[in-house]
Image (cartoon, rainbow, N blue to C red; front, top):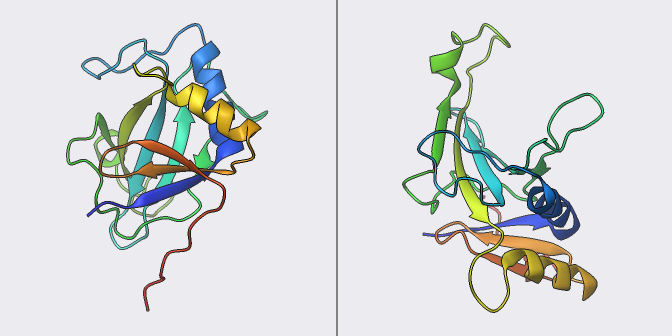
Length: 164
């Protein structure tokens, strides 16, 4: 079962433009799309809590806030649970393996799964060109299909039935 994640298109375009203009787009060893401009879709999960879903730029130097934290664009609606995502993430970071549980916050630490969304795929129009044209045409939302990791734009975010 796939789901659609919705993000503010203007924010996604900011991340995409940064990634595309960055002098480097490194990945961890063994990751796909080495040195290819891509945004990173990240899903952080902690047992018993809703997942946190966001996009990051892969460009280096990274896009940061004044305090040094990376600029992240959070999904407008988070699926629960994140069903429909491809079963093989490009990267998995289990913070439990890096830091003993609870030493930072006293709470369980998340497991982060991430997928790369290339911005210059072959075809008549790359995802980056599609986002630029969509912003110019007045579209406001970027939708990512969780099963295929394909991008689409919408004028309005579609409301989903909320669980009772």
